[in-house]
Amino acid sequence: AQKITQTQPGMFVQEKEAVTLDCTYDTSDQSYGLFWYKQPSSGEMIFLIYQGSYDEQNATEGRYSLNFQKARKSANLVISASQLGDSAMYFCAMREGQGTGNQFYFGTGTSLTVIP
Amino acid sequence: EAQVTQNPRYLITVTGKKLTVTCSQNMNHEYMSWYRQDPGLGLRQIYYSMNVEVTDKGDVPEGYKVSRKEKRNFPLILESPSPNQTSLYFCASRGTGTGGELFFGEGSRLTVL
Image (cartoon, rainbow over all chains, first blue to last red; front, side):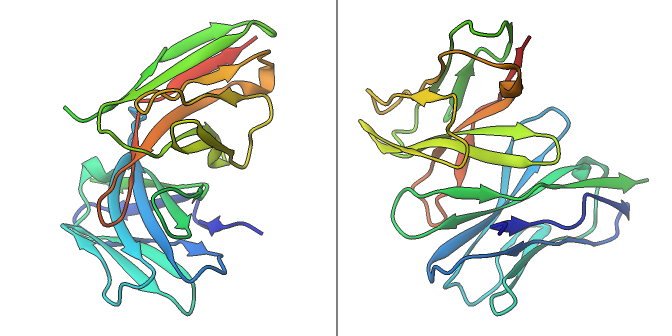
């Protein structure tokens, strides 16, 4: 079974609108971390936001928020007030287990295009 | 500046010619890892290392070797590259903050003919 599933290969959003990128995960661990990364066309991987499995509140970082629904095992990324510079590939990722180093699993990504 | 540096950034080689992609980080991170990115497959972990002289296989280790003799360096070795190893490779180290997010290098695009 896939550890991370992103079901939207491509998404379009109007500039200044909000958009939700879906991510579901699969783990039997009680302790895990969820991440979102942005990959612009230039290719680098940019960390956006983190949610720990024990965090009760949804994580927020500026225009990014993570809609964490533990029972449904979903960790959707919400981008508010989309900008042209948000056009990029977005990857959801999970780190299983505790400690300072474990395996990371990535989804297949969602390509977001912001329309002027 | 805190960074992860990979070299080479671009490489075209031929089947069977051994090559090494170097990775170095200046953040004193204990954890380092390698990924390959392929269209439609996302990023897949090749190897990771939790500390010097400690390495473990990720999801797709076949055809690759790694070593961790120093904390800052984590080279990826392709002993006998094949065309199916044509890919975009990322090295990353893991931070020690709350989330322990990965810091990525700029990527190395490898083509094996």
